[in-house]
Image (cartoon, rainbow, N blue to C red; front, side):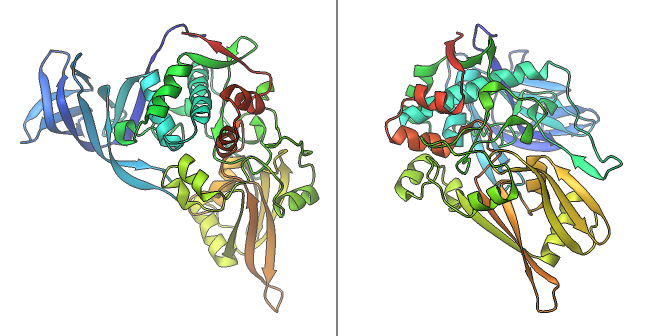
Length: 442
């Protein structure tokens, strides 16, 4: 475990051939040359060429490190930063950041643009980017401890040998998952694949500063190790277990729990799933309170108005086109979509897709969501209804679903509702991470 605050390398842009940025205040190269104002960077013959606003070359190296002045309020801005990549809320923004700027070659013709920033400064932005900075203080403290714990656990995990998920085998089964230890050259990306990080572009409120100060160096710990504390938007009433989304291990503190003060039995059959997903059982995250959601969700997340229970429908032809585009496989005429294995929240982790040309089993949770949407389904907790035309041919597939995200660990909306009802951060963390303890490590 750690005993001091580390600096984090956050990739703002990955594998880009060129970029433009603006330095507000003085930044220094290792040779003590000061730079300020507009700059451009491009990859050329295995090196990064940094040029000033007039196009004059400043420096040419495989790696360029720019450090802000020690006593200044210098920051830098980067245009064309994508957020919500491949999700339905994807958009492009100009964003601003404090800390150092690192340009590092990632291939022969592209580079990473990286922000190097102390962990606690990074967290202040993550909390303000993931949820509204005006959310209840006890929720912001909960989010700070969770995000801090996940980050340190992830950095430790990156040092261990990777588990590579299998590709297609002789049973036509594709089981894939994505985790952040596949990043090379930096610690985390700045988007939802890791944790949302939008620098000082997000308004960091007094509440966020208080949450960071109150929890500085505080981690969730289980059995002598920092917890791999996952989080997402909404569990849909029941949280999920780790193997449904990632490798086959089962941390004891990430067991499935009911997001309520009344326990609900886990989903164990297709009938259970149908009963669960076509009803609206009480849960902390079962809220349509517009005023509360306005205080806890960032503006672009408020565009998703139905998340506890939702519905998505496609014509057969639309879904065939999406499947071909997202999987790279031609299924022909789509005939059946059959859940083979669900987790206790109802999230599908193995799904059989039957077409006239081929049959494939796909998993895990995120890959299923990716295959069945132009962006991503809100979750893989869904049941499938089929509409037929008068001749008995399939007309539409309708997904009745619940929850938003992978469902493992902290339910952000549920936690925010608990905080609004007077629960402390300690109580909220104990609810979602059973058996974990809080420990101050620096």
